Image (cartoon, rainbow over all chains, first blue to last red; front, side, top):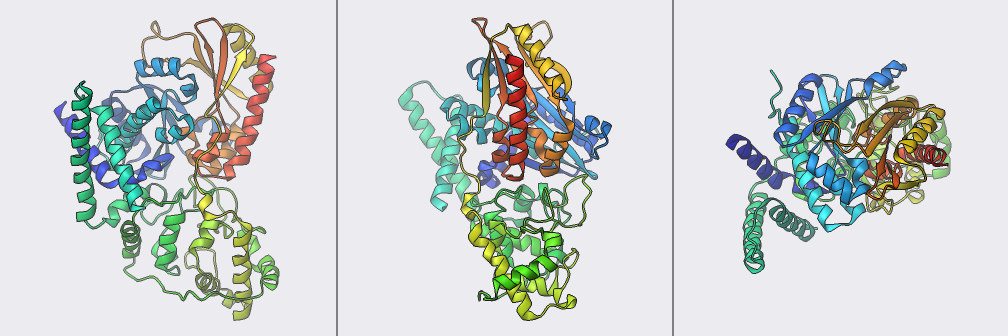
Length: 158
Length: 380
């Protein structure tokens, strides 16, 4: 528990010190030096350690390859918090297309690209102060998750 | 610019404190404490920025490596030393600043000059060789003649309209490519704002090692031919949108709403029927909350209908491999408290804006139209 809190504090400090100027990015993307399978395991672990539940994983590659299109391994991981999804979908139904949250990951050789929409980029569209705080909270979590993946900090099941 | 960034940092710290810290309820005390904490944290953050010289490697890892790897390329252009040998530092710095308007490469106006310099120095450190330095002198060739030469020598790679080899950018994952490095869109305002006339001339004269760009002196062009080509390429500048057009707000709504005249179950049936008629593969339906809690607790009046046209998906992923972050082919059917039913879908037109990718626009528009037709048919 304390270790997790300390890790998050370190990650937050690191983000504040090095990455604050990048807040305007619409799409958050990192590269993991780990292969696809390890990154997938690490991603699920990191999502859960941030208090979210992985609701399902959608395979995008099988449908494509099944029809003869060339593609590497590609998954989209859906995750969220029940209370959050329930409350927000009731109060802000226009958010439903973005719920639960999603992170896409795909193989690039022996490495993996992990990507997510930056929720803060939606702030300019919704223009709602309460949602801005929610978007900021999600952004912090997403950045922290992606940073863990980038640095190989999350358990990858060695 | 520095003031803007500073204010942004300060505001973000305040939002963070409001969001994550349990502050006391007394408004006056809360305001004072909030101000004190924000100022203290702000001072800490800014002092770290001021005191430490920017770390080029760390900045590269944060801002560039996801697409460019370390000299290997991927979503972004490979930055191997051999490929960078013919471009000056200014070209790299301005490319970081302006990006490529409407392509995947974003602009980084928020980075300080010191940070941009540090990233550039880091890229240069891979070879240990300084970049070339070119004069600023403009080249005054004959653009009309250059246009003819362009059609003969350049258009087969850079396209007749100068838009590059084709869709996408860099050597994107899992796609067959004609070139190890994509010929750049030389009409792009970001490119034209970054490349000087002298740099373009040198590249045409000497080529770019490690790419398909060959020396056109070897091909037989003379100095004045190349000057004419440079002037023709520069003439694209007047026909293109400004480099400042990148990014910006959009008036597009994020979601589209449609009222259904049917009840919840009938709406779902009708929607599925409309999807089948459009040659979409229908994926298993999912309640919005499914997987977040036990099946006995989920809200059963929010059903997401999922579908896919793999041909269109593939075309879109060729242009933007990260498209999965949006996964737009979903329509959620929601029964409201009063029994009325609504369909809610992502606005496809938002996609090209989010990705800074004009090439997605036509495909997103196509998808948007198909989606509207499906919904129209479902709600007839």
